[in-house]
Length: 257
Image 1 (cartoon, rainbow, N blue to C red):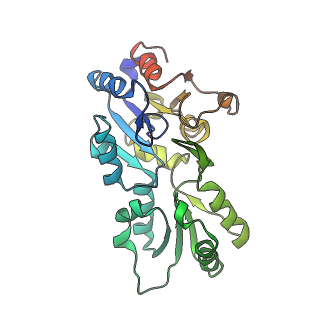
Image 2: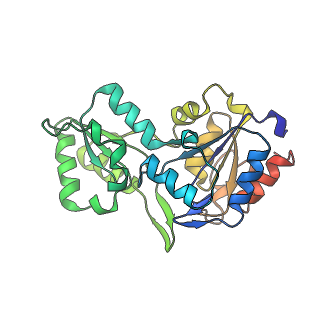
């Protein structure tokens, strides 16, 4: 079945690495996929760093990745802001600012609140400023609504809790642009039919359920944010549950999906 796979979508954080630690065997497994000549795209909800920052981190870790293969929720959010000519208040990490700084018109009032993972900005004063803008009619855009993510010292709150808090207090609904939205996955695939694609990731809802909704096969890895029993929380269940990215690659190359 490997010959029928025309695109492999690969999550990054928790699947290939956790912070600056490589998942054991992931570099070599990625090289094996390269040698199989299957087109790859790295799809990520990471919002703590710009695409340039992320690309440099991954290459330093030893991964053979091309910058144009990275499709992030930051890219999707930027396209949305440009298309609607929005002037955003950014609740994102400073390391991601370079993807948006040319879009902020400081001499005009913000008409959108854009939320990513921004630990240093998730405090009362900044969230209240965002809340007041929403009350005045600003749009609420969630780069993603992840519940939590994996850090080197354990699981940590994702932006979902803060987006939900703003939704509740301002009585608005956020527009989500990253995984698990169907539009995100369709854009990542381009012209490749979903049934000819595979998604490998550690988040059972954002990576696997989101991909499978549009017909992409989902391989859930038991690294990163994976917790025991995650595979039983979605319907249909993952196509395969894999101990790590290494085993996911084995399944693909052995035609076992």
